[in-house]
Length: 358
Ligand SMILES: Nc1nc2c(ncn2[C@@H]2O[C@H](COP(=O)(O)OP(=O)(O)O)[C@@H](O)[C@H]2O)c(=O)[nH]1
Ligand SMILES: [Mg+2]
Image (cartoon, rainbow, N blue to C red; front, side, top):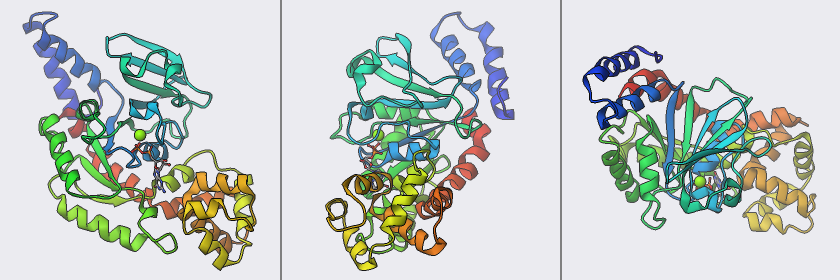
């Protein structure tokens, strides 16, 4: 039977009811689905929010691997489930009910090109990404990345259905506002009032963009997060600020000693010059007399963003000549992601039996 006392009792009820139901009827089928779901190893945590909120980037950070497609590609409009498996592969679930597997990219993850999935975008209902040998194979949750909810994207129905099938929700918002309360209320209706302040945590995303590009974004980030924790009371438990792009790199596997060396070189630039170059990605990428060539600049910008580059250079100055490992630890701290992981463990994982039974 499933783990957890309440889940065990729900499972037993389903089992006891089965002989009294017309076999193969809708209720019997629904109860079988409930039992299958209870037999899954962990929580289903969905990640929702508007398009471009930084959902997929956050999913990658929490997976510790860049598996979800980010930015604007056709694949980012798919609902994607991420779970640990015995091999790297994708299951394509089609709208016509057909399901099949395709091999994952080396290292796992979703291809940027949807045609590699063997169906057209319109034919695909959702995909399940299984990865073998992750850094944390015992992660007690499955993450569900959704394409985004807002009337402009036209994807609301797809996203809402996926969100309604989850036990808990991370609601990601870069610029919180009135639309978020509406979206959360729509979601709650869809999930038959199962989404409450108990199983929804808000994420104030892209906090690196809150600053003016030169200063420390965190004081403002904490203020905005506190304001929206208060405004969205009843719809979510708390809003946690996270620099997702930085977290994706800090917790991921891409950053190498060569990248640490690039940042060491960058740290030799006069501080005022660096400060000016980091005013915007555009400025930094076309910084002609900086210590890095064009390729190096593009590489560190892609990995860290302006805020992350500034934080990394500061860590180089503070720590002397840190290797990649020490630098990543400093960046992880600067990303604020650990506060979110704590919140997930405290609110969701600790309550998993109750949330899943519900
Ligand atoms: N500066 C910055 N950019 C981010 C951050 N998170 C995501 N992005 C970028 O914003 C774009 C959209 O992010 P994505 O995760 O695909 O958003 P989604 O549509 O909500 O899944 C991508 O180009 C990301 O690199 C962040 O924390 N800071
Ligand atoms: Mg996305």
